[in-house]
Image (cartoon, rainbow, N blue to C red; front, side, top):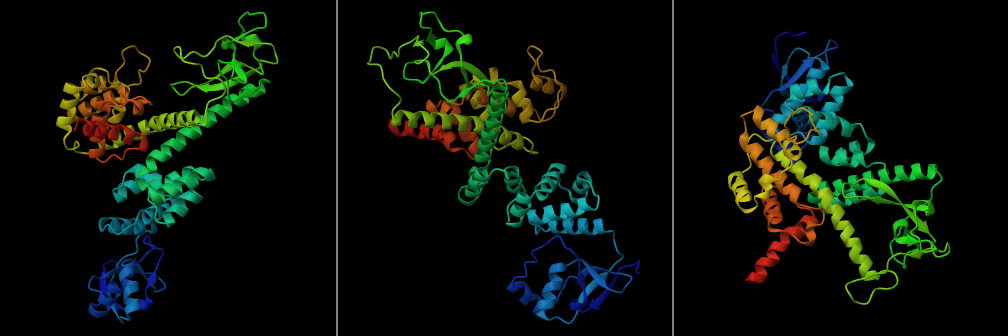
Length: 450
């Protein structure tokens, strides 16, 4: 075996191309024509095995093009055989540096390396990628849906999302539709699906617990006579005394503003049981509505609920965007004016920010002292480091804006919300449809003023 590389002219048809990380050799007609006319100008790197066969290490594309072009010989630099893992790593690094490797190819390469025992940390070190990137690629490759998505040309992030919901056909169908028609909305739709899944799981767990105790569950309840089920707090017994929880024969599952589920006692079929409503509808002197809600009212309520949920989901996407933005080496363009404008025009952003949110946005490592009165991890971070103060300031302001945005802010948008969202969009953020309502409300105001 050669210990010193030697340059040899070899017939490309006699060379062996092993499993290569670049599945698509991209043999365009123009490339083959160039090889046919000029030959292979840059030597292919290969090694000769003990049986005499020459295996290509680098230059798969050139070798295949030479075969297709009918070139009788190409220059081959024959070198000492590297270990299999090093061979693949070398190919990955070479192709990444040339920006010729797709994300699917990268994931395949990392997968090959993992199969022969190379850890994610080692792969990241050798290829110059982050450990998280490598781990995400391996995770996507390990699932049927993720692997298939990569094969269709999806990015690692897209493949991971499809893999996450591979057991949910409805969610998968929605995600596929978004990827095809509105790829910019993928993160927003994904977060809404995650929230929907988590809410459903928490609700199902509570229902299972209650039913295990022999309790009945109803879907709807209210305070007035037009409801089939009355809250215990809204009912009187036949003798006129207020009903108590002992009178309840069912429960309704509710979710509070913090996202926690609880069971409220109700009386289902209260009329037949002799109960009466404690309250009558009152709307300030106008004729009270009798009977169930109209279709228009139901549609309005449905929109209200959907938009509120969408805003909650968008909050997670926004904060993740800011976190990734502040993980870069340079602060985003225009951050100086953004922060001074916020402090002078919306001072509550600086005075009322949440330290936990701000610290998370800059990835600050602080001791977990949550629960201690007045605990503020951003303040502790600033006290412990003098580096990158502009990032802490941006995080502080963004966290302040986040605190002012409620799930129903789309109903009565404030200028501070528009300023914040518009700045994020300028920095590359894609607003959700509900956030766009807030942004567009400013355009309406400008038009009216004109």
